[in-house]
Image (cartoon, rainbow, N blue to C red):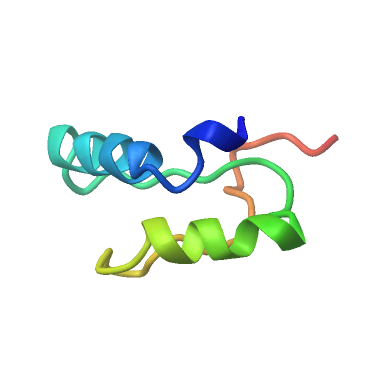
Length: 63
């Protein structure tokens, strides 16, 4: 919802997850939408490796 955009909610949530689970990495299935790239760049600022699209883990089935 637009009224919640750019309030820092996602940044705070992802930071809390990183603090609670150090060393854990995860990915989302599917590609990043073109218009969401600024979001991922913003929430990944200062995060080692940032948030970027990667290859799917080998244990995840295709389809």
